[in-house]
Length: 308
Image 1 (cartoon, rainbow, N blue to C red):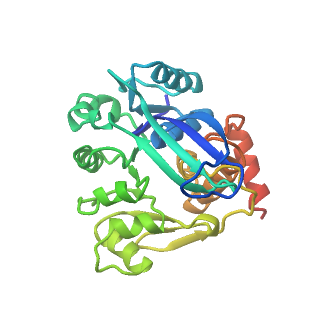
Image 2: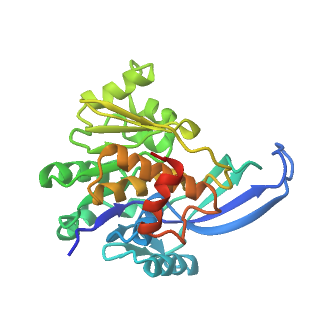
């Protein structure tokens, strides 16, 4: 029996408003609307399940109709919810306002229940967590929950990945001891707020995190691609040139591809190629998930974007 990837963090309703023309402030903008299941950890769990990876999701659902809808989508995708929580009240919601080119203009997040994923709740789920091949947490979780996961990962040797999510969420973890963290995945804005004020430049910021004991820093640079840094070396990979339909979930998809590569035993370069390939596919559809992509097809697509 394969060991699951266990994802810990947010599950939301995503409502995306796609502008039909250039955005104007302080007035009404015409838009089309799409509604999808979202949340960083939920997106990653969903995509991994579609790629034939055994996956558990620890998150919080409301007991409203939208929470039931989110659960149903997860279960139908093959995501297991053994340690997830259902709370009284509304499910979390993310509203994204997208420019006409699909890039994010601004976003709004209603996330009042994530605090229920406590260190105590994870302690009760310790036996399940010990079965994991990888642990993935998004920075929506509380700092105390994050600290528990860092300690658990160091104790058990199970690699832990932290996805910063956004600048405000990344900033929460600035002064947290992340020694032994297997991987952190910031963009340049998030990276700056994870580090001290003394680290002014990107290279200094990466080096500071590594000096603090983070094993790998995976820096995302949007259309320019990404790079992985550790004590031994750095690896960079350009992003494919594509027409963007919707930017939502591209980072989540990238991390899903990387984790898939690790479960298949690929090296960092192979994992990056899988990550960028999956991200490129997601950028060309509405929503955060590519639903018609299985593991075999994704592996075949790598050569489309990165021919030998």
